[in-house]
Length: 325
Image (cartoon, rainbow, N blue to C red; front, top):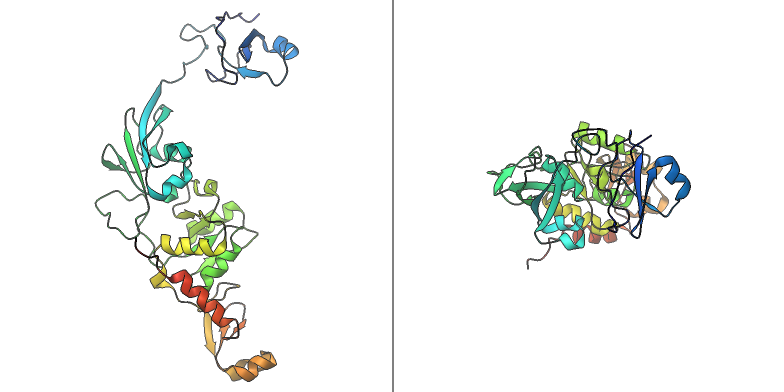
C-alpha cells in the first residue's frame, strides 16, 4: 500500500504545482480554497471531482535522496531582463520598457529564455549580457543582466555579435496564408513576394530556408521555429499599414521598382509591342492606350488604365519616408 503523507493545516493556494509529477507515485494532494485532502489516486478520484485543483506535493517516499523518490526540482534562479524599442510589443504590459526579473531553472539558452517571454528570435539583432555581446547559444547564468535589442538596418553594429546573417539588401519575401493583400502590395512595389493560401507552415519554412526568403507573418509561433533565420512578425492587421511596416523595417524604399512585377503571380513584367497583343486587348484599351507589358509567367497584359493614377498615389504613400521627430 502506498505511504500516507502528512501535511500541515496551512491553507494552500489552489492550482499551484509545487513539484513536477512523478508517474510512479500513487500519492496525491488536492486543494480547493484551502481545504486539503490526501489519499491514493483511486480513492481521491472517487471522492473529488472538478473544479477541485490538483497539487502534486509529494510522491513516492521510498527514495533516501528525496521525498519525491527522485531528483529534487532544480533550484530557482533569477536574471534581470530589459527589451528595447519595438520588442516591447511582444511583452506583457507590466514588463514593457523597464527592467524585470526573469525566473528560470537549470541553464537555458538565451534564445529559449527570450522566446519563453514571447519574443521571436527573428526580431532580435543584438543581445548584451552583463555588457557583453552574446549569441543565441549563450546559457543563462544566475544574476545575469540581459539587454535585448531589435534589428538595426540603418546602424553599424559591426563590433557586436549580430544574431542574424547580414541584412539582405535586395530581400525576397514569403507571406503566410493570411497575408494575401500584403503580398499584392509588395509585388506592386516590385518586391519578389511568394504567396499561396494553401501553404502549410512547414512549406513556408522549407521555401524560406531554400531560397533565403524573409517570412512575413502575424503568427509569432511560426517565427520561433529554430529553422527560421529571417522573419518579421507584423504588428499591424491591415494590408496598407503592414506594407508600410515592412518597408520601414527593412529600409526598402530605395529598392522599390513599382509596376515591374505581376501582382497576381509575382513574375516580372516585360514591355511588349501593341501589335503583338492587339488581338487580346479589350476594345477601349486598344483604342486609348499604346504602352503595354506582359507578365513573363501567367502572360497577363498590363497597361496604364484609369486605375493607374490611384495605384500610383498608393505607391507614393507607401514609399514616403516617415518625418523625423
